Length: 92
Image (cartoon, rainbow, N blue to C red; front, side, top):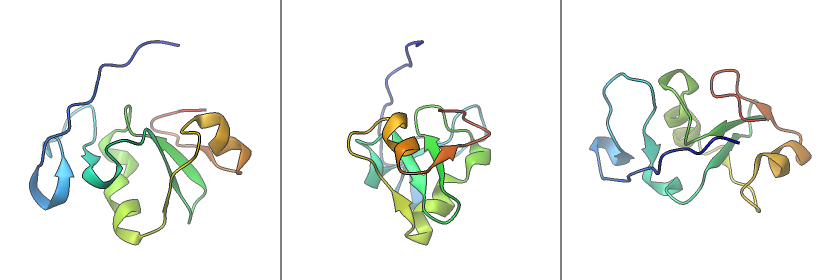
């Protein structure tokens, strides 16, 4: 598995970490700063927050209150719970 660069968490506007400008990566919600894998309970899709792109709509998942985290924080655990990979960030 390839190494991912570390994520720098800084306070941004609207409680989001990182930059809001369009680019390759989406910003990480501060509430989930220590989580890598985030699931959407409505669609049963899991996102890799280290590889998420703006099209993943992570902020919509967080604002809906339907975000799921996994213990252990791995894509295998997400798959065991019935989550499938996001088509945009492809984690599983």
